[in-house]
Length: 252
Image 1 (cartoon, rainbow, N blue to C red):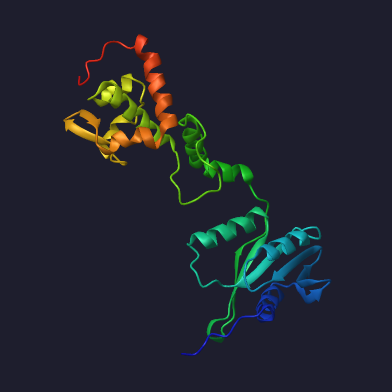
Image 2: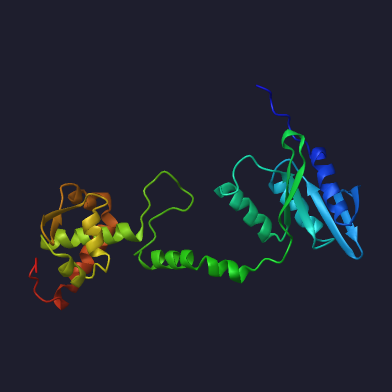
């Protein structure tokens, strides 16, 4: 099998040069450390060439913005798809820095230049609006946690989420009162997700006794040793609220 030749930065020069030349620009290579400059009237464009997207390239291009707002980075067309997370993330960073992006294809001797996007101001407000659901989910998760039980930056370990806390709260109620219905659990303050948590039984902590009635499973009894601090918190909360709770008819 014939090995694909490595694309060098100088291989990108001619296609990009020709592209801007055809648009009527006065194009030059290596002008005061700029890989390519393209000038038309008062408009000045700077294009930096690299074999791949890198932090160094982004820094270099960002520094060129001291000279002109029209700065592009030009790289070979990536082998991975444009719908991959990696490509989308790279494009986001380039857009965030208000850089333009050009890809160059040299496959089978054909030279094709594609302007992925132009350099333009980044609309931060619009970006935040598009991420409104993610913001809402983060705030909801924060509000659903009792305390801070996770260490930031760690991986390959169980994370204490609002969902897991909610399940621990339910387990504490079942330990205290025995078999309960979702409605009675919600009256004890376990929240609107109670029925879903019991039915899905994601952690295997619960067991359905009959329709609409649940108890702790054998695995569920291990919760209190696994999460002693939270178990103590919710158990105390249940005890503190007993005086204000009406007598429980557990399964109705």
